[in-house]
Image (cartoon, rainbow, N blue to C red):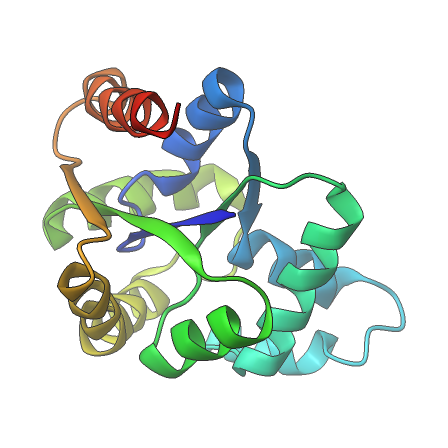
Length: 189
């Protein structure tokens, strides 16, 4: 069973997922982290391809990301996952659910671009990430807007989207997130 975590670059997905792992025992799989690890892995058949796509702010081919996520899920031996940063496009959502497992629901972190930009530029001062620069960030915002909103709309039609504003401080945002998950698990008992 998995929950999709979606939001623009810098919305706070990783921070909130860490809290959910701590409080609810999920396994957090960040598509971006898996892709960055794979590009650094010696002998990776996908390393250069991933590096090029990330540097250009483009979406890595779904077959690569799905394979990395599926392998990580199997290797964990667990059954409850937060998938962060994937799917980013409709075809990815449909393929992942067909090939791996259907999503339980989507948690959408809504955040204005100017707030995300400020966060990413600050993170870029220390992260060492190739995509934490103004050119890549601008491309990532455009890609998110063009490709991820249809995914959100698709899951909204199924009643699977919970939206959380991410303008406030991380602790205030998490209070809302925790409330959503507490109610969801209460309903499952």
